Length: 377
Image 1: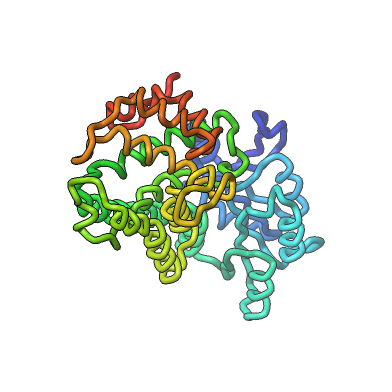
Image 2: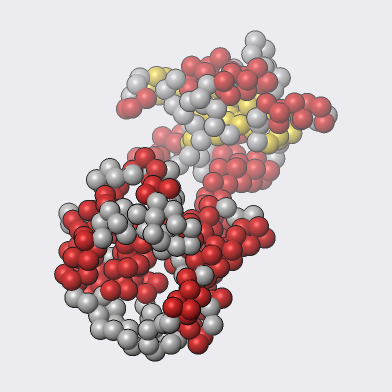
């Protein structure tokens, strides 16, 4: 081992660093994770370093006091911390680590010769992620460290798998709805594209940004595909009628909002999932409410209508206007835009309608191309 000085972003400091670390390229050095090994036994420090140096940047420290000095310059990815040390023992060091928000999230594994349950329970209570008994083997040390260093990656991958599963279920449900309704082919995918464009434009302009910045945008946008899920409860006779609905049939069709709210509510109750399905529920229940209170199913007015519903209302009507149906021709983009502008403050939230008008070229391009246009620059 050689004594070297570090300069770079950490400032200048002297540390004992193994030869393998010095021989690594700068890129290899930067990519490797840093581990502090804190133990008052030189034998244990040497054993740990020998076991870890090929895979990690290892900094060995003979006391908790030295650890806290180095922490002022370097934040490790993990700390191996001995319990039985003079001056500041491992438990005391852990308490100090957890009281500092800069260091509180660093995973700490206790190295200990104490094998009783009480000591282990106390360590876990203080925040340790694991215990490794001394004397330790190289295999155990590497496996435990690898597990804790990569647990975030494992969580991210499993979360991504759940998101993929969730989206697959959403697409399947949306397809079921759309395949039953022969009059609205492509409506769900188009409105999802328009919503994404509109939401990003609203955030860029600071419109309702305080509320939307608390949203998981991917969840809100993807869940909007379920806004018409309540049509599952509408009979095929009404859903696929080639002409204009009678007043009685229209009243039945209007119940799809409440049906969608009820269906998604049952899903929330049965699965315990909240965020994604709650977003879907808001879109399903409120996308036919009107700013002036003349909408359905609840006759809400103004900002009493959840923001999800106010956004969906505009893109839902725009797509209905610009899409051909058996009983009507498709309107041109410009004509549909004039209707939305005319209905601003009556059917639609005037501020959202204003943003929609400003980005109408993007909406038109998305309609023509079937996808969200790339942002300039």
